[in-house]
Amino acid sequence: NAGVMQNPRHLVRRRGQEARLRCSPMKGHSHVYWYRQLPEEGLKFMVYLQKENIIDESGMPKERFSAEFPKEGPSILRIQQVVRGDSAAYFCASSPGDNQPQHFGDGTRLSIL
Amino acid sequence: AQSVTQLDSQVPVFEEAPVELRCNYSSSVSVYLFWYVQYPNQGLQLLLKYLSGSTLVKGINGFEAEFNKSQTSFHLRKPSVHISDTAEYFCAVSAYSSASKIIFGSGTRLSIRP
Image (cartoon, rainbow over all chains, first blue to last red):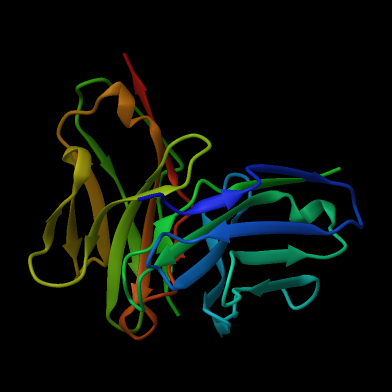
């Protein structure tokens, strides 16, 4: 079974552009989580989604950030009008259900020029 | 709310020596506890978890951790480390009531010297 797939692995954007990060969960997993890891820090929870529903977005910045997990296709984390401070590694995890172990992807490293 | 403190940002040890990575947590409710390992440019792998029952938890790669409720600690140990254990280790916690939301510590970088 393929693990959690994230793409791209590396993404470079200029200030003001949009960044789209994709996450395909493991087969059979219907729950997706996004985390952000700033340099020299641990992962910070951003958002928890099930198919077509946002369950918990308490870690999402109020502006410019959005996430979706459509009925078909991968989950998307979208960052509009990126700024230097958005540079980080963004990790996606998936699980087969609520309160089940989360399996992590290898992350997308976002660099803002 | 929950929080996790990893007291050491870096731990250097010699190969085949024992190691302990320290972790303390804070929570007003019952929690699950985890240790994850992150190799360079990769995602996190679950080493072990404490859900309930025996306070000594054994994980993969020869690691184990002991839950100490009175000291609110969950230290990770390995009796003899190998070069391949070089990685970043994260302690994490989630509340029973919101187990899907994991709170991570800031990490401990374990470097193994030959």
